[in-house]
Length: 226
Image (cartoon, rainbow, N blue to C red):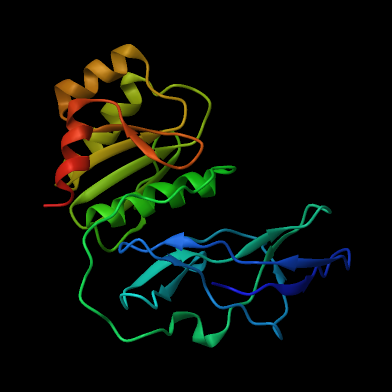
């Protein structure tokens, strides 16, 4: 578990006590990056997928998994990137792989949290090589894995048939399967369109737990990556 460190905002000079959130490894063990108590927090001025994720090794099973880089929101409005120690990816030697366990709660407060929850779930299903999708979806954020294209929609608008169709068409051009995650659910005609096209639909509840919406999602949840 990560220890708390003092973080000072360079914009307003406020001091904060920060503890990195823990995320569940595929084996079910909570893991968190080791923070650098001597490092200096820096303002986040732009977003890039490769800069927002770091590898963290689980001390229980030895897996190294990418998790969101620690960030802190200062009351002055500045988003701070909290420095991590070089040992953040170090841990115990790998043990025998554990069976897939139920996902742990991950409270969703931001769009970034929604993407993290979807990524955690997909890794738990066995998908590897998660990254930002090459093509931006019509709404939300696209993430890709080996053989899969996922769309995460953190808006308050239920997904439409067009949203589902655009995801399916993009996945077809990349010869990938696809899956849709939504915070606000789906219009009834969107669910019907997804069933016709073979698109699994999930709703992300506020604890970050994906709930299957159609039978295709039930099947994916039961079987995982193939």
